[in-house]
Image: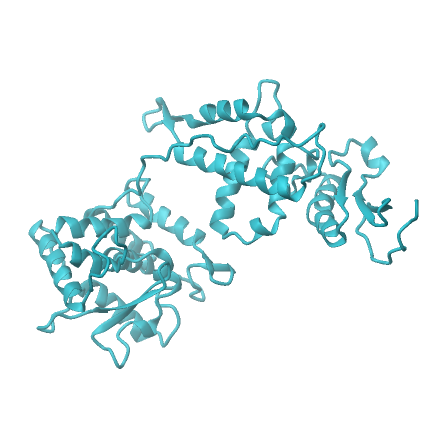
Length: 426
């Protein structure tokens, strides 16, 4: 066998290269013998023939896990250093997916959903006391996946009276199965020739499971709940969240539009003092919403008063920011164009619980409540379309045009219905 030309490329710790017959190098991560004798859980593993990929896997998976073991760390089943487990297991599959470019380009929310699924499935304790994540991929078949689904579907919880009740969590378990299905396909693509206990199973046990969508819809807030939320938010020093909830209700906007796109200059600019510029990031649509009717009466008196007060104190930037410290934006941006609303969502949940509202409510519930109000106010389809800025042919005929007059008329109908029910807003 002729050895390939010697490479001068540096290698990470415990990574070795070996010549192949084809005149190329193969790379391996080797746990030192002294570490094996001391009970190191990290396993030696092949890293492939691509230098950059081998270095990347060694530095992002194996070395962090090895260093964690050396320093006495005991990673949990959901640890970000999953190389603590044996190559070819379910945990290893999750680890391979995490370092793949297709996982890295996901939004923070999508990654969190995947991690919840990996923890739920990989952390399932079997009868022998081991976790499913420790099992070899070749030992997991469709029967095991289906059985696991049924066992995870129903969970026992304790209600407010201390009684144990069973609750179905179909949405959560469905997401978990889909996450495993995705990770399996990606891992098989990354390692098409990888040998695990003889062969990688050709059938993805998490595919074609016949998952049925949950009947659960986004909980819809009532107007009374909106008022209670806003009152408590102000009392807790979070007036920006109170204003944001009202924007979601009145203008039917999503959290991304409200917290990451709505700027001070969008509201009553000098050349459009009677309008507000509304951006829908999802549809890439820009609309102008009238703030006054033909007689000059404000269409959104409460909301306009709050936004006018904010604009008097701020020259530019996002309209709604955090209510403390240096007034940072509510979202963070781990990646450009991908705002993360984790902190905002947690604060909203704190307000909901402090106000004694239904725990299933979320910020999204206020937008859904606004849509429900349009129906209760008997708006026409054309008026609802103008209010929500929808263009889908599933809602209205394909070429129906919307006008600012439709928006103004619809808004007045909504406020009239609200006042009729005793919800005086002036």
